Structure formats: C-alpha cells, structure tokens
Image (spheres, rainbow, N blue to C red):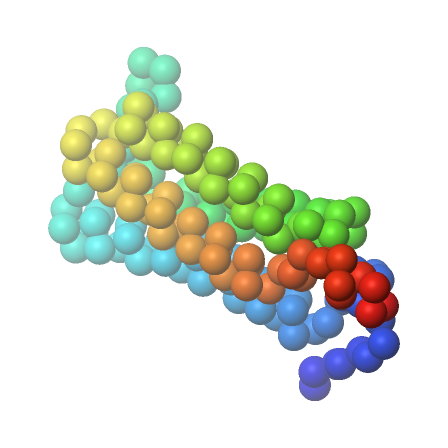
Amino acid sequence: MDTVITGQPHTAGVVRPTRRRARALAVLGAAAAALAVWVVAVPLAGVDLAVRNGATEQPVGPGAVAVSALLAGLAAWALLAVLERFTRRARPVWTGVAVAVLLVSMLAPLGGGVGAAAKLTLALMHLAAALVIPALRRTATAPVTPEAAARR
C-alpha cells in the first residue's frame, strides 16, 4: 500500500514508501546491470577478468561485482538522503558529486585491469553500475525555487 502524505514537504522527515521502493529498485537494478555485464563477458565471452593488486593478479568474481555495486549504490542513496535533509538543492548537488565519483572511479579499471579485455569489461561494469545515477536522481526532491518557497 502506498502512503501519500499531504501538506508536508518531502524533506520534513517523512519518507514515502514509494520513494524508498524506487530507490531500492534503483540500487538493485544497477547491481544487476553490472552482474549482467560480468555474465556476458566472463562465462559467455571467456574474458579472463582480473585486476592487479600490488604485484599479484586477483580474479574478479560475481560476488565482488555484486557487493561492490550494492555498496556503491547504497552509499549514493545515503548521500542523497542526507543532502535532502540538510539542503534545498539536494538533486543538483548530489548529481554533481555522483558524476564526479563516477569519473574518478573510471580510473580504476583503466589502471587496474589485466589486459585490454579486462579493462573494457571493468569499465563497462562501472558504467552499468552508474545507472543508479539517473535512477536515484529521478527520485530526488527538486530544488526549491523562490516562488515555490513563497507558496509554502
């Protein structure tokens, strides 16, 4: 059952179950997308997916992909929730931070992947997990304009 609360702004500490559900699905969907890339690349295409960890090579399995994508998605959700609580411009601030984190995270596959196929696969998994950005952004409260603030 969906709960709709009227008369209170979204940032008043009341979280609609529909928003929570949408955010959970966004995180799970992004993790599933990253896992789908792994399934196509590793078992189906035969990519030897490994990363350098110091002087050793470490294989990247489905568990590592799922946990990494889930943790990143949950961290993104938490940051969005905190920003919504403390600023009226949560959506644009969060989007900027999320895109910056994605750009920095793209350095890891390029430097850590073992071989061109592994680097490409890791980059594609990062981009698949980044689907959480537009999905969570869609659930964020819109910036409060002066006109909207005057109506409250």
